[in-house]
Length: 72
Length: 173
Image 1 (cartoon, one colour):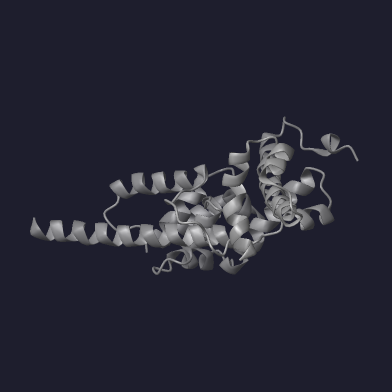
Image 2 (cartoon, helix red, strand yellow):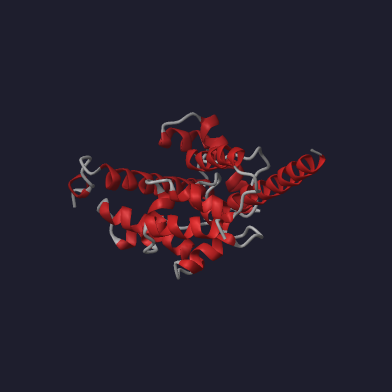
């Protein structure tokens, strides 16, 4: 399936922007779950940062506390 | 003069208490949905927890059960994601609501839609003589045409004009 063909067209901004908002939320949840899984599998913060193309500090700041608390 | 001062003081005290309950409630609802910052949809949920009970009365006027709001928030996300071409399984797998049970201590913050609600409530409060209620929170949300809260109300089958009428009637009661 070519997802780009099924996305709402920008000429319908209400639908397109609603899709963007929900996709963003879904991406955030997917990122959090995937980082949690990566930590469980022994990835370092440097590796996670590299995969997300963000700095190690940014990756740590965004996820570390949540993951540490989840593991408690 | 002294009575006017006492009235204003009592009202400000009540407003402060309500704003605190509203914000803490919205934050709690956001965390239950796995989100750190509350948005308009979480303020919508929180309006129903305010002790004045006027938000519930507005929904009673519309014959709508407010216990369906959480599911409606999820449903509007599902609809938007299906519209973006995602299948049921992908949505179910990735739109999981994991509650934040132990949030980090930090200053209260909201998403921009949450900020809009607080700013508008503050502006409307300056014009009002009585303390704000849950119905006033709904009044602000009803003025928002787009976004998750607006889509949630639509997903519940609530027409904006009917909601505005019910709010006005409840506020004027």
